[in-house]
Length: 192
Image (cartoon, rainbow, N blue to C red; front, top):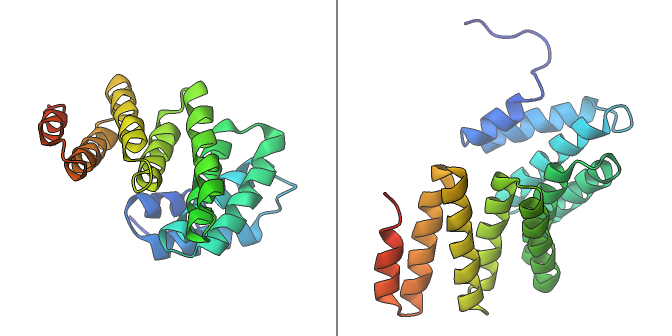
């Protein structure tokens, strides 16, 4: 298969992210965003900005991630792109935690969970639940375990084994930290 001439398709950035090639994804998304007029296609801009924010978050460039998540929300809100809004809220919440704004970040991630759940957006809900559980565990371990356990139920109900395995591992680890070893073993048995 030969190389594609001209500019790469806008979806390539997301594909590179899924492959774990964050630098390549960042370059592709940055190039696409630079060429895109937000007023011309606010939906596409919102989607790309949300992905770009997530790349910054994963690279621990949280100030930039929070800023790009906000730009995604500004574009997605008027268009009522619920999935993009839920994803960007989650990303922004994680970034705010990295900026020492933990309570604000947790509130945004909680809202992301609720929004995604209300609209049956399993991927957005599961991602937000995973992030929320991790952020709550130090101060509220029981609440974190409950959030992760609910995520396991969502993953099982929606057939999301890609999320089920990490959720079960995370829940078992949390239960072990609070010395509930029998419950941790039972949790591990939930993965067939």
